[in-house]
Length: 318
Image (cartoon, rainbow, N blue to C red; front, side):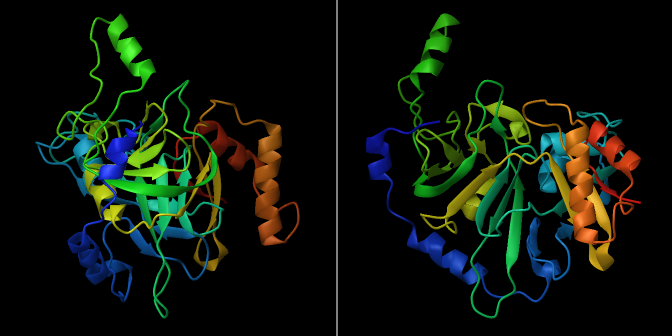
């Protein structure tokens, strides 16, 4: 999604009121229990945060309602509850919340976006004496033929209540359907950028809100990174211009918890590749290198099964 240069220029001012509110909210905290949902102190040991837990659905709940309330996206909630109805889980149904995360094996700085996981990690700067933290949010990314670009970039500008200027490709497709697209969509309920947008140093790509939150946790955009409205609002004023953004595609993550316990998490690769023997050997090699106890330290058959399922669940390695 792109914004017109004039619109960009008009929206350079940052709200001092909102900035002051963030400064007040960013004071030191004692432990993770005092942090907002999806915010965690970085672990002293290992590379995992959060926990898996269950909640009970009410008669009015959809699975997507529950997912949004618990910082989870569409694919995450669906894969964690494969036998539960998406639209009518039913009163009293126990719903699994996959609220545990293996931190990406990347420098813990700025923003890290793992497109395979459909999740964003933000490592805010902390004051001297504060414990480093991480925030993580579900995202929507580019669909087939509009893959979100990978690589290291940075944030360049923040836009509040942005106007959206549909690119020529969208206007052309709409015209072919007999639904001519407007030259500009002003701020409001019909604006697909939502109320906040953070421009990246990749022409035409943004991290922004959405007017269709049910699509968070799906590959449904034209390459931009979408966030729930409340999530983009929560980070908007706190992500400085010039923040590094590292966009990766890591469908396999290996985790280590307290006491050296080992875990694997595998997602469907964005290019739909099948994990082969080379991938299996690489994963097992990583585990054994970490353990330092020789070639018998990993269960090849179990690792192979986890990679084959690729359902996003964090599985302990026996």
